[in-house]
Structures are given as structure tokens and as C-alpha cells.
Amino acid sequence: MQTGSITLTIDSRFDNVFLVGSAVNRICRAIALSDQAAYEAEVSVVEAVNNVIEHAYQNEMGHPVEVVVTVEPDRITFQVCDWGKALRWNGERPPPPVVDANDVESLSEGGRGLFLMYALTDHIDYHRANGKNVLTLVKRLPASGPEKDG
Amino acid sequence: MELEQHQEGNVVRLKILEKRLDARSADSLKGKIAELIEAGNNRIALDISEVQFVDSSGLGAIVSALKQLGGKGDLVVGGARNTVLSMFKLTRLDRVLRIFERPDEAVAALAR
Image (tube, rainbow over all chains, first blue to last red; front, side, top):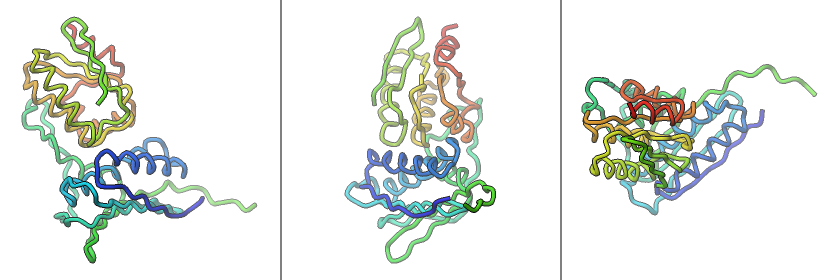
């Protein structure tokens, strides 16, 4: 299969996030991921980018959000980069949302983004260096058969 | 957000005409549903058959609508495609929200 890397950059505005999401979905389908897997990759990246806009840049436009997409034989990696405030990150996988059918009032309106990112990817990591924050999301690709010569 | 609204008996069918229910559009949906509830509509069938993408903000808007109704009415969803439906299941919202395959079924469920 083909491998390679592309960097997508948008301004920190919610109305630009679909550009990154749509590109990620299309790239995933181009490497033969299923519609469901491509959708899951899109959601996880969109959640990460939304987080950057809301938390790292505090809903302020005019800042870059960069997504580096790298396709390797066994995985696709998304590095979501910003130069804003660092996130509080403890590396712990959030538990599944508590949903009590008899108590709608207790449902939370927010807080599902991080859960989705963890649930929809195979590996997730966050680090900050020299003022740059990088959230890395990895989705493994289904094993394909050995490539035939010629 | 572009929406289409039809009164069908005592049910409001609210169709989302946009492809994405996300951080950009969620507040607008929340506002529209709040408006409907304030005007006395408490049976709302949300037709999401045109929606191709929903994220946690979109799910949050639907949760907000459910909470606004506060048990004094009902909101159901119809027409979710498989990828969109998978987000409701993953976040377990399918436990509190009735989700129908076809929008007409969602309307019919409330019309009784």
C-alpha cells in the first residue's frame, strides 16, 4: 500500500473544522478503511481539534491548528498540534458515560469528547515541548495479506 | 443551522437539513428546540436522515433538548444512518433516547 504524510492547517474556528474532518475521512477511505473506520477516525480528530479551539485557544480565532496525517503500512497517525494553553492530561482513559434511563436530569451535556477519542483509536498520547502541544491519535490498519510481486 | 419544521397533529417533525451536527451547528439546534418547547411543543421527532456526521457537541445538543423537556414531553430521533447511530450507542445515549430507523416511525411513535 502507499504510505506518506500530509499536514493540514486550519484557523482556530469551529466553522473550519469540517475541512480537516472531511480530509481525514477521505484519506482513510483512500487507504481502504471501511466507512465506519473512516468515520471513527474523523470523529476522533474532530474531537481533538474542537478541544484545541475550546481549551488551548479558549475559543479565540486567529491561531493555527495543525493536523499531521501519516500513513504507514500498519497504522494511520494523526498529530493534532497547537501553540496555546496546555491541557490537563493525566493519560487515564475516561470511563464510559454513565447513563441512567430513569434520570435524564443527571445526564451531562458535555464531556464525551475525550471518551470518544479513546474509544475510537488504538493509541493516544499527549505532550508539550517548546510551547507546542501535540496530541497523537493512532488507528491501526487491518492486516492485509502479503504483497505479491509483479 | 438549516432546519425544516412540520406540525403533524400534536407532533413537531424537525428535520435537520445540514450534513453535520457538530460544534459549529449544535448551539443553533439547541436554540431552535428551546424555542419549540417554550412555544408549548413537547413532542418532537428529530429527523436526522440528512446528517452524515455527529460529534460530541451534536450529541450534547440532543441531551440538552431531552433535559429541557424535563420529562414533560418526549423527543425521539429517526433516520440515523449506521455511522451516526454508532455514536449514540457508544455513548449509551440509545438507553435514554428512542431512536427509529425511519423518520416516519419516530413521528408515529409520538402521535399515539
